[in-house]
Image 1 (tube, rainbow, N blue to C red):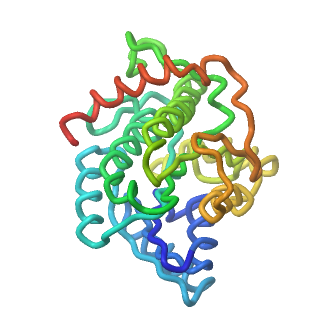
Image 2: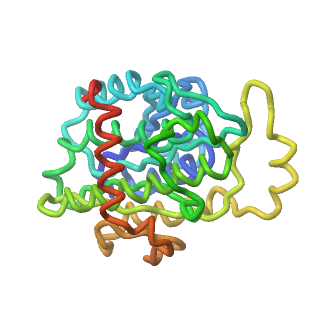
Amino acid sequence: MRHMNVIITGANSGIGKATAQEIGRRGAHVTIACRSITRGEEAKQQLLAEVPHGRFSVMYCDLNDLESVQQFAKAYQKKHASLDRLINNAGVVTLQRETTAQGFEKMLGVNHLGHFLLTQSLLPMMINVDSARVINLSSGAYKWGAFDPQDPHLDHSFSIMKAYGRSKLANLWFTMRLAERLKHTRANTVAVHPGAVSTSLGVNRDTGFGKGVHQVLRPFFSTAEQGAETSVFLAETDDIVNGGYYYKMKRRPVKQALASDQREAERFWQWSKQMIEIYT
């Protein structure tokens, strides 16, 4: 991976940071795309302490705001001629209904739509690069998910499980339909289930809300390093199936009819495309 350019969203903490460390150790230039430059720079110094020869840079990208995503993509394209790996790692869990800068329900807005726009914006840098890859972090929580176009922002029916599950279903659908569109290019895409990992997901940084629940459940979770293993594997290996869903470094079946429904996935793609249209 020595000459590769890699972007990892949310790489200032958790799985993303652990992924950045291992990919940086392999010689790639890693861009930490995050919504706090201060936390990003702190993470960079910690990464350099572990990987002194590492090449890490920090750039501002707030997936909660599509304008920020658009600006990040333009800035990255000015700095780099190509992109080998885009790891759509960042994610949020909100314990009550929140919205993004553009008014989307936050889990779908950040976990899916922000990454959808980011990927669309950067694909021109990837489609002519041998085995360039988009790696989307999904989750087994996709089984809880469904998408109702009559209530896309969950104005009437919010629950944590429903909202998080549909955002992870969105990641799977996105991967499936992107794989189809990449078939005749040199790039490919895969989805990852990192497992149940102990990170700060679901904890409000400003209020600390959710921290108590997280502390109680922590012993039952894997570490961030364990959660990063499959992302690192998929960033490095050539042995992947375009559009595949991976867990613990192996391809796994998608065990739900809705999640593997290409027609529903395409409908959702078209909805997503409409939502980001003015930013592309």
